[in-house]
Length: 268
Image: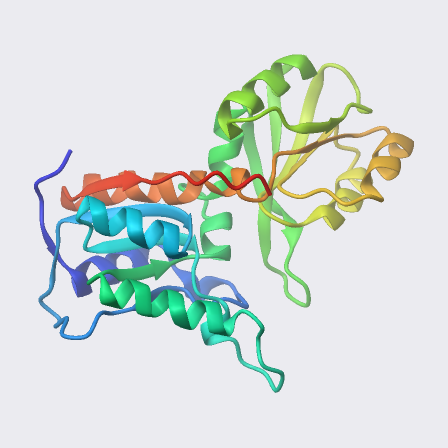
């Protein structure tokens, strides 16, 4: 699909309405982060480059492809950080913002709202990729809020763990790290993309068979073994490629613009 055009402000208004970043708190800014100098409200977007994280590599690839806008999951966190202490990432994000502007690229990003989105979210897409049915978006607490960013799911019919691992390998592009201590076959699961290893305790408390997460911590190995739950670690980056790609497909259907996902070899 391609060939369609849309004004930047119209496109961003549609994205903001669909992703709805105001529905949950986030330490990162969501929406349009970089508007190149000289861009007016009627600026036309024809091509949208997609990536997990905003950085120089992505800016260069997007510009070479002829993108007008870059859409990511991880935007420029340090540039917008609020606090008394300077953010060590700010110099990098200041340079990154300049790299996007200098190349005539806009930059938009959606963080936690894209993890949690019920249709195109990272967690919902992971569940589909693993052949699991979403039960509820009721897992993965945001501290000091009632908001959930993850979900619970079931395997219907139950599926052997080996099959889950095969599906995960295909979905994430690499063999995941697995503590195979849970029941066989797998019937129930919780999914939290990116960080969130501490949600392992909540999965144990619910008596779930499987916990899928982006990051692992040293202590989680023994906890999972002792509790009798399977812990599958995909990698933070690998677990968050899904939402931005699904959001790109939504843009294609909505506006007919051309999108392209640019993978990066990030093993973490």
